[in-house]
Amino acid sequence: MEEILLGGSSARVFLTRTAAGEQWVVKILVAQTGSVDGHDLQSFRAKLEQTDRITQTAPILGERYIPTTHIFEGGSWACQVTPFYPSTDLAAPLREPGGEELFFRQSAAVFQALLVKGYGVDSIPAPPGFVDRVVVGRFLRRLPMLERALPEALSFDTLQINGRTCISPRLLLRQILDNRRSRLDMLAPSRLMFCAHGDANTRNLLIGAPKEGNVDFRVIDPRGSTEYWDPVYDIAKSLFSLSVWDLALRLGFHIEGSGATYNVSFRRPFYDGYRSAILRFQSWLDSMPDLNDLFREDRLWRERLVLTHDMHVLAEAPCRLSDRKPKIGGDGRPSSPEELALGFYLVGTLLLNDFAQSLTGGDPQDPADHLSLAWV
Ligand SMILES: Nc1ncnc2c1ncn2[C@@H]1O[C@H](COP(=O)(O)OP(=O)(O)OP(=O)(O)O)[C@@H](O)[C@H]1O
Ligand SMILES: [Mg+2]
Image 1 (cartoon, rainbow, N blue to C red):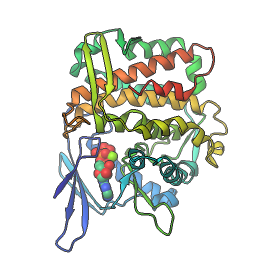
Image 2: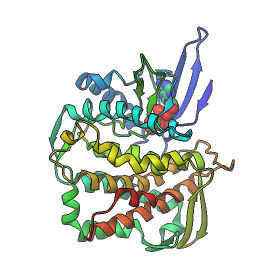
Image 3: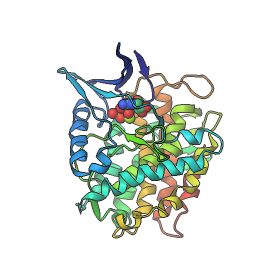
Image 4: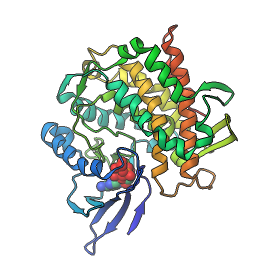
C-alpha cells in the first residue's frame, strides 16, 4: 500500500492493489479537533450524498464522477474506497514545455461538463448575503485558527509585503463590508446554481488517456454540500490552483522577514506554463460556448471571479495548518504547515489590497495585471 500525497486536506489517501491486481484508492479521515470547516467528518460523509445528487440531476456530469464503492464508518473516522483511475491532474501539461494548448483543450472538455452540464442544470434566485457569508465569511470564520498559529504576522494592521504597504485582511475586509457595501452588492451573483462540485481545484479534475481521440476525464472529491452554489466559486478554485495553490504545494514559499515586513516568493524552479495559462484564462473563458448564457443576468461575474480568487488564496492559509502530510519544496527542503500558511496569507493580503483599490472606482482592473501580483 502506497500513500498518495497529492491531496490538500487532512484525509490520508492510499493506493492499494488486490491479489487479483485490481487497484483501489482508500481515503481515510479521522476526526480532529480544530480542523477547518470542510475538512470535518460531516463534510466527508456529505460528499457521497452530493455525488448521488449529481448523478441523478446532472447525469452527463455524473457519469464522470468516480463512484465510491465501499464505505466503512467508525464513531470518529470514516473510510471511502474508489476504483483507481490512472490519470494526471488537470494542470500537468503546464509543467511540460509547450503544454498550454493541451491544457486548454482538456480544460474545455472538463469545464463544459462541470459548468454547462453540471451547474447549468438548475438555478434559483440568489438569496442576499452569498458573498458575505461564503466568499468573505469563509476566511473570517477560519481567521482565529490562523491567529493562534501565526500570532506575530497576524497581529499587525499594516504590513509591508514585497515592498508594498498592505492593510491586514481582517481590517480591510471590515472596511469593504462597511464602506464599500454597494459596490460589493453589485458583484453578488443574481442566481445560485446546482452545486456541481464546489472544490474544483486542478487535482480534483483527473485526465486519463484519450479515448477514441477525445479527452477522457474524471471528477473526484466535491465539497460535500447540496446547497445551491455559485459556479464562479469553482472557476476561481481552478484559477487559484494555477496562480498560487499548486505552485505553493509543489515548490514551497521562500519567506524572509518578520514582524510587519516580509518578502515572499515561490521557491525555484518555477513552472512558466502556469503563468502563460493565467494570462489567457479569462479570454479563454470568454470564448467558451454557452458560458455567456450561464452568466447572462450576471454582468459583473468577472469581477466576482477576482474577489473569489483572492479570498481562496487567503482561506487556504488556515487549511494548510490541518494538512500534516509532508510537503517537499522545489529546492528539496520541506515546507512546514505554518510556513505554507504564512505564504498564502502574505500573497492573499497583497492580492486583496490590490482588489480593494479597484473598488474605490477608477478604471476597471485588468485581471492579468492583478493576478501577476501572485507571481512572487
Ligand atoms: N479514484 C482515484 N483514482 C486516481 N487518483 C485518485 C483517486 N482518488 C484520489 N486520487 C488521487 O489522490 C489525491 C487526493 O485525493 P482526494 O482529492 O480525494 O483527497 P483530498 O484532496 O485530500 O481531500 P478533500 O479535498 O476531500 O478534503 C487526488 O488529488 C488524486 O491525485
Ligand atoms: Mg482533493
